[in-house]
Length: 115
Length: 115
Image (cartoon, rainbow over the protein chains, first blue to last red):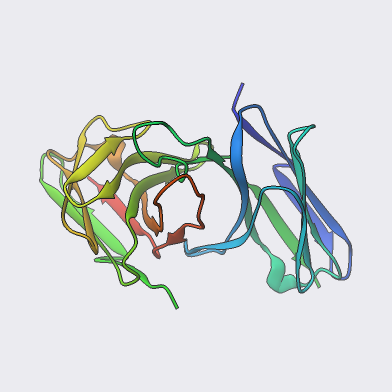
């Protein structure tokens, strides 16, 4: 079983729909990251959170530490939101040096928003 | 803005060639990472470096080596390229001292084809 699981793997939505992408993890973490990858390869960090909820524009990320679960929501989706969304977790730091920044990635959710 | 640059966007090499992939960041980050990304397997860590001349193996270091002679530059070396190293290679960097956790900044990626 992967340490970080995302669902769904693929998602098609109509413009304007509310979208939810889920991420579950099984390891102890320092933080959870949501990343966006557009066709062509570049990856952008959307959120980094260790508790509660963060909002940026139409994007909202939540995390429940006790349940080891996070969700990424997109309100009023638009075709430009079409991308792969990747959940990643920062491991707990190792003693010998700060490896807390090592990320373990989920498999990604491919989102297509149709006009 | 943080900028992470990679030496090539596309690269075609022959089996057995020695291949150098270069990554440069301009934010004085301590940590630098090399990942490969393959369909169905997601992002996997090859190596990371937490300081000049310091390196740690990631999940899939076999067939690769790295070099970090200067803080801003992290090189990935394929000593003898093989067809199973055809992939998208992504470099990233982050701050990373103490026990904090930090956002990773990604380069645009190098799509390597080994024939």
